[in-house]
Image 1 (cartoon, rainbow, N blue to C red):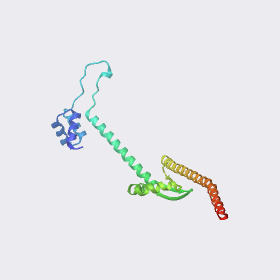
Image 2 (image 1 turned 90 degrees about the horizontal axis):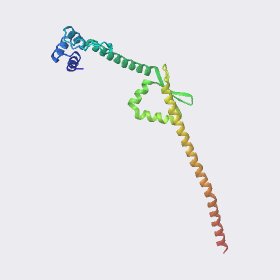
Image 3 (image 1 turned 90 degrees about the vertical axis):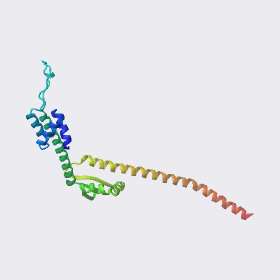
Image 4 (image 1 turned 30 degrees about the horizontal axis):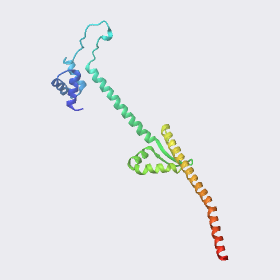
Length: 210
């Protein structure tokens, strides 16, 4: 947030003029909260709002100091920043403490840290993704192992493996059906070819006899 935006925000929150907001920020080293405190001490911020008398408590307006409003906003931003920082730390930890495993027929072929897998996918995805995809059809299985229970990730890997197996099965069935149909067609053509050959032999014999 630049100084102009700070002045505008302070002017809006404290209901003071642009010059007053700017002077307060300059005197407070451009810290909005300190500037609010300074303006309240100088009596330049709005006091409690005036409202008509009512016996209904819910209808009476309550004044919230501007400094408290700004402080609450800063606290919420701090919480959000800490939350993002915490998520990033968890991500780094998961990458370090967990591994990507490649197995085939129950035998482990390869084990690399998740961080290495991510780097490979970032810089060499055009090579890595096709290799992983072909590996599924060759019977390789992928999983994650480590300190964290990466259940959803492993379920996704299992689903990909099952899908590849299903596609292989369907392809094999289609290929088998096609080969069977070709064999039947050849078997059906064989008697006709034999009959045609026999007829040619008979014709040649008759010609020789004459």
